[in-house]
Length: 303
Ligand SMILES: Cc1cc2nc3c(=O)[nH]c(=O)nc-3n(C[C@H](O)[C@H](O)[C@H](O)COP(=O)(O)O)c2cc1C
Image (cartoon, rainbow, N blue to C red):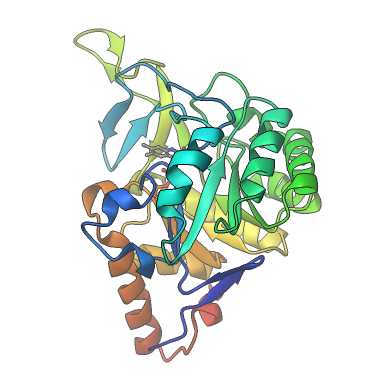
């Protein structure tokens, strides 16, 4: 058995596999299917300062090799999370990470400050890349100045591991990653969904209520791999890779491109046990190739 443990900032992980925000609820929803404590980390649904209803339905559409969504950060707000959800999930024996979003810098800061007080949340993932909200969200992740402003403000109040989730809807993702690193991020995760749309030709209407939405699943993997590779070459902090990972081979491709850990999103909707199958498959690959640790294959791509 190879050593699967990795460290992301101050976050010690038993293995490099996490669940992606918005695709695994608060973890408990999957506890009937698998032992969720065996996952390296669970990133819970996007949390905002105030309650959000999300966007009107329909907000999902299947596409060839993927899906579009425009959920729009539906959640009951950080105070509800602290009072009602945190007590239920705080003793799950893995890293429970909160994904934080906001409409303005002050929202992000206030939410992060509250989560900083929760002893059993060792990290936050700052979502500066949501394409499905009118204000804030992706706006911060598409310019260096925007990323710098929100990350540096949150860094001042948030004392634990700060992961910043980047948007692929940019021309040069490496320069946004460098801005996040300079502003104090401990790690960057990428990619969030790619902006797309679907049309119902018979009705001559868009499929999604918001017309455009975020594309995820196997169709985005080549874009995600390319961006992880570019970012990993540019920054010194660890990179968390995601986008279209369906199995252990996909995960290994991300490690080779330079990711120190990975997340799995859309695949959870198809197979609730996919995370643990990926952990087993990574181990099998490392054994077969004679590696004693997953760290040995991070960035090991022979170009
Ligand atoms: C239904 C759905 C909801 C999502 N909600 C969030 C969210 O709240 N916060 C966030 O940062 N990303 C959210 N995402 C993006 C995923 O975390 C992930 O970045 C993206 O889906 C790419 O990974 P995948 O191809 O493995 O799904 C959501 C994705 C889907 C499909």
